[in-house]
Amino acid sequence: MSERIPEHHPFTAASPVYFRTPTGTRVHLPHCPHLTGFDVHPATAAERLAHPVCNWSQAQLEGHGREYFDDLDDAMRRIRVPVEAHDAILTALRFVDHDEVFVVHSLTYGALGRDGVIVASFGKHHYWVGDRRVNLPSYVDSSRGGHTEDRPYGDLCPVHHLTMALNGTCDDC
Image 1 (cartoon, rainbow, N blue to C red):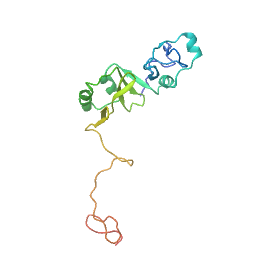
Image 2 (spheres, rainbow, N blue to C red; image 1 turned 90 degrees about the vertical axis):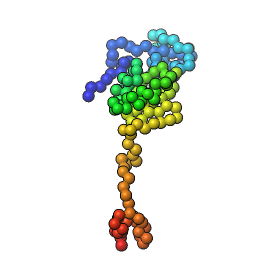
Image 3 (tube, rainbow, N blue to C red; image 1 turned 135 degrees about the vertical axis):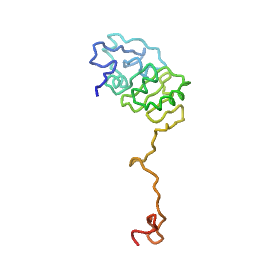
Image 4 (cartoon, rainbow, N blue to C red; image 1 turned 60 degrees about the horizontal axis):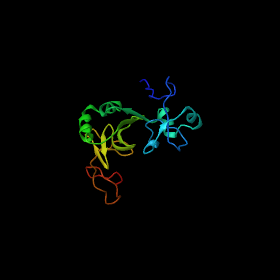
């Protein structure tokens, strides 16, 4: 599988545009949550040299951050949400007010953001809006040891207090 180079990767020909708050001590990429709620300006060449890149923006440049999309369909395809789950997620998230759609580089989930805050999320087998998580039909509940099934067990042995076989025999009797 080929690796996708982020839009503002250090090895691309064009240098990314950085922004800075008037009193900030670091420079940031345009989508950086540190810029939310502040008046920002494009960093000058002198500011770029004088101030380091913030940790969030640096992680983004190194491929550990987010990948942004124009629409939810593209984001779902990127993290390989099963096709049969697309309609359920689109229906559930259609009224969510958002200004960004992204997936994390681990490809474990995607999200809708509004003003720098995640307002809804989706994965291959679930979605959530606010404090409500909905598991899709493809979701499999599991324990730390992996997927477990309900198995029938016999009664407890009155002498050894161990679970007996379904036929009523105890291994220690």
